[in-house]
Length: 184
Image (cartoon, rainbow, N blue to C red; front, side, top):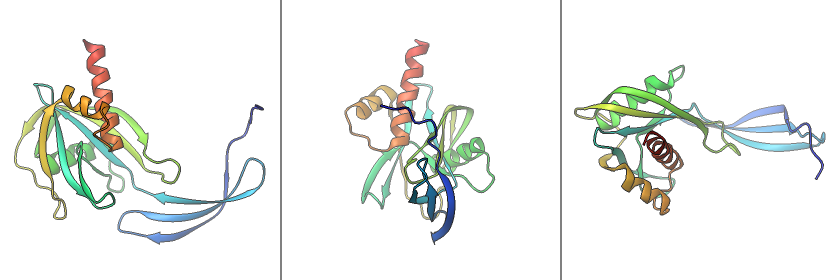
């Protein structure tokens, strides 16, 4: 197979097809590396964070919430979208406090992921929260969340058994499990 040197696409036209409360959809016309034209639909997202919160006893804090696009309740790590200009670590601390009523005295960056690079520019930043202090949560008015916890090892088993489908949650749990094995 011949090696293709240039893989870049050049955007030559862009129009916003739809604008929602925090995302928008753009229709793009691009020039491909072979100089042909193509159409791309792109969801523009402000970015988000996900937090793997671990207790001193190696329990992971999780949230259950109804996800309308999937039409069911999911089990996920706490998460939330970035406000314009907000630092991701500040957002992670804020979301953990709002959703779960937890202050993390130690917040460590894990990685950033492109959640769906084929059609969205969303970048999600994952953090690990430790040295947790618990108080009463205060979720947003439109958030209905049940907080739960379980041993990280049991949760990793759920992930590996295909029982968890949320990408940020899977990645966060597996990174923490890998870190734990490296530290052992």
